[in-house]
Amino acid sequence: MDNNGQWFDFSGAPNGGFGYNNQLKTAQANEKRALFKNASFLGILLLLYNVYNYIFVRVFYFAAYSIKHGGFTLSLNEVRKYFYADSSSLGYSSSFSMTMNLAVVAASVIMLLLTAALPMRINVMSMLKPKKGCVKQGLKTTPMCLTLNMFISYIVAIFVAMMSAQGVTVPEADFTINKPSTYAVVIQLVYVCVFAPIAEEIIYRGLVLKLLSPYGKGMAVFFSALLFGIMHGNIPQAVSAFAGGLIYAATAVYFDSIVPTIIIHVLNNCFASITDIGNAVGFDHAYQLYCALNIVIMFAGVYAIFVYLRGLIKGIRQSEPKCAMTGGARCITVATNVFMLIYFGLMIWQYVRSFLAYNQ
Image 1 (cartoon, rainbow, N blue to C red):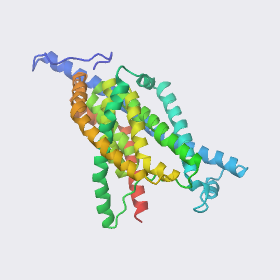
Image 2: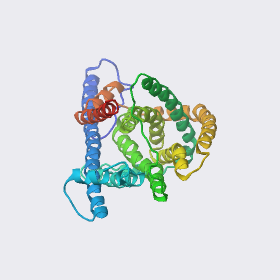
Image 3: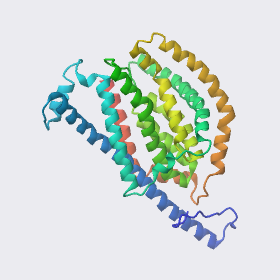
Image 4: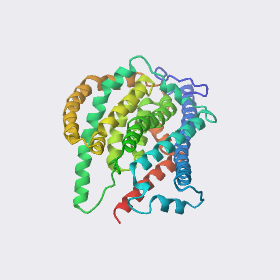
């Protein structure tokens, strides 16, 4: 790619020509600079998202303290003691934690989009425009993603059980609704099944694919899935999210829209929440319903894999941009970008800290 955004085509150039070699080296250098810039933007945005989360969590704590306690303090320790004094405290309820999650993620995503749109001039919202056939494709692809997630989850569950037998605890996500109430159930449904999928698609499909797909759609799909996986903060979710994220990202790239992946993500989270919501509302057959749907979805998912997956991959390969750099060189450029390295290091440290906390 040159500085004007035009792709060089080297497919018909003679090998060994001095002019051709110079042109190739120039194109590679220009492409590397452009990719480095976009990878830097991506790394900065991902780091800022964590910073925004850090800030807005504390804003929420102080605001909630002022509302519930009727006073104001600048001591975070005092606020935490108020909400987590004992196991019956408000801080341990799902209504409190899910309200905080929704408020913090909403504020952080808004700030992230403003940062991307204003100083960086990244038009992520263009990927929210539905393209012809993308809604139908989202519904078709959903069983494929659910089946892949279930298959990977079973394998990870075996690994977790083996580690547990050796006395090692692998941290896992827990969406059990504590202190069930109508509000707790509704707010968890809104956050887990609606808001979180939209927010995550905007960030881990919208932003990532917008910045990286011009330099290789396959590469963009891989990094989108990788970043989506490690974002979850625990190994069981990370592995299944990475596997499913490959199809999520491939679908978004194919249609140049995150509308179908929002549909897939919403349906996936609704399916995963059946037992938690069912237990909270007192539905005795929630687990049986979940198992029955498992069987139906697996059959539909296997069918979708054989019928739709090949076409999805073929479509992406046919629309791959012509690049001067090799695929490996482009992946290395992204992975070794200083801001991306800082982000990966931060995520790895969170995994290590969580693992150590569970195994003290």
